[in-house]
Length: 168
Image 1 (tube, helix red, strand yellow):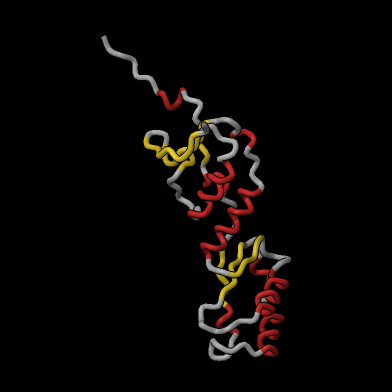
Image 2: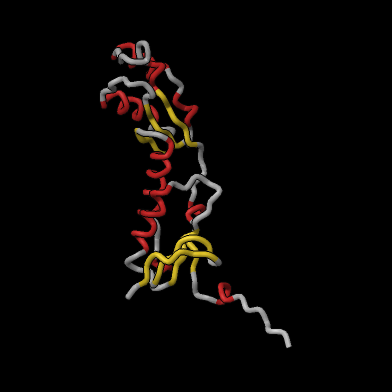
């Protein structure tokens, strides 16, 4: 007599949370100001302001923007502020940093605004593998947000998860 195969994962109360499901659409762009500096190193205010005022900012419509300077130039805070003021009507989000910092900042907003009430007292598994560039920091932020309400938290896939937390 053959035993029936039972899918215990499908029958469990385990809830999978996939950060990839929250990945917002929109291009991520790195805006490097080095070409607006004299020899890539010196910010001359008059020239810089002219570059900013003549630039077509509308091309960044609905993009997520990371502002940076890839040279060792010392950039005053007002320079990035000036650019952000011009970008603000078009870009979804603007930060100073690299693309990973941008993704982390995007996910920080998402996780801060995430309604986690549906996960109350549930055993959770935070899905680990993603095809989209979910930053490592997002997993930490999510686990910290879920810990006070979850029955348990695991990481990975249902068939091979790593236990992280269990409410006592």
